Amino acid sequence: MDNTTAPGASRVHRWLQRLVQVEPAEIRALLWSFSYFFALLCSYYILRPMRDEMGIAGGVEHLQWLFTGTFLAMLAAVPLFGWVSSRYPRQTFLPLVYLFFIANLLLFFALFRSGLTHAWVARAFFIWTSVFNLFIVSVFWSFMADLFNNDQAKRLFGFIAAGGTAGALAGPALTATLAVPLGPTNLLLISAACLAWAMLCIGRLGAWREHTAPQPAPSPTGQGQAAPAGPRRGLGGGALAGLRLVARSPYLLGICLLILLYTTLSTFLYFQQAQIVRDSFSDPAQRTTVFAAMDFAANALTLAGQVFFTGRIVKRFGLGWALAVIPLLLGAGFLLLGLAPLLAVLIAVQVGRRAGNYAIMKPAREMLFVVLDRQEKYKAKNVIDTVIYRSGDVLSAWAYTGLQALGLGLSGIALLAVPIAGSWAWIGYRLGRMQEARAQSQEISP
Image (cartoon, rainbow, N blue to C red; front, side, top):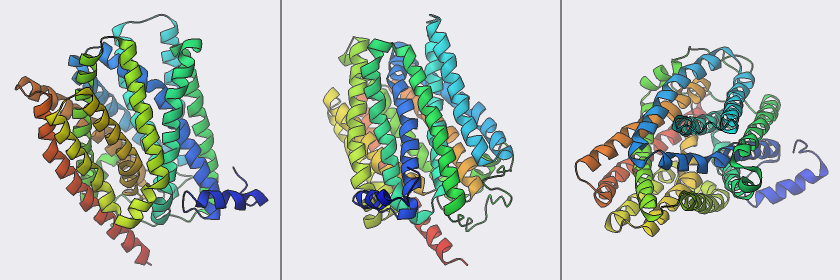
């Protein structure tokens, strides 16, 4: 993977060129990034079926409390991340994040092996897994936005995202294959091993960046610019710098609004999924199987989309339409769900939403951060991906509960989601146009 100048490198380049527009000097970084994201999502998707079942086992009527607990955990974690990233260089604080989560996995492994099955352990695992998922992915994409420039992001992010999707396919497959012979608890060790591999990838990518990649252009506005920040220095700015950066940037506030609209509709659909699946199956094993099957179907579709369509859609239609197309399709899906709130319809809408989000929406959304400076890429982005994301979760969870208390059923809430999807599409389109204007401004700056 390291030797792009070997005789076989040209053959690798020709093969990759069929899938992605990669330059020879970028092959090593592309493959390590693919491997890095594969390891992260494989780690998470080994745990995800356990999390979803624990959520239902704790009572669908209590899901809003689990979402609230996740939000509070995020509020505690973000200042800690801000403090660490302010004081340690990128090559130090990135591995520290994964070491922390490895230690957490080993703690849960010990708790589960001890036979402690109290409901609070299950709830803690649900909350921890929800925090874990957002943090590891946010840190990954911050690193990617720091490694690659805007042109590279448009060409490579779809393929890199496919690495995560491949990992998301491997995770459930490992769970299904090994859960019986090894026992579910022992799968936590495999998840931890995946995080250890991710740490190796960080080191290899850091070495590539230092020796071959050009320095990123500064933010055109200069907001959040930290002159001393660099790969070998801390970012500076203090533990709460990310919040201040977000508060004074209309562009970042627009991304916050995009995330809030996205999480609102995702949470509505998650609650409807929990209700419909609960009413359709009484056996927890059957419910876990349904969740795993939905994961596999969504991830298989996502992989095909990321490899063959993401980069082409962004290049052909622009970032604005790439950000708008999925909420428009989801609005149609909610309309269909409102007219027929059935299990088959729910599965089709949920699988389609997740495939579209991970294949198109997510890579396109991460491109929004490429035109920012390093503090914004790590600190402001981490606030948006964690606190803003989970605040949207908890607010929409309580909003869903309130709508039910007012007498709205599945159909009524689904129809209410249709105009929200339209607003999400409009915000996404506007942000995409703003990103392209910023990128163009950076290209013509001396």
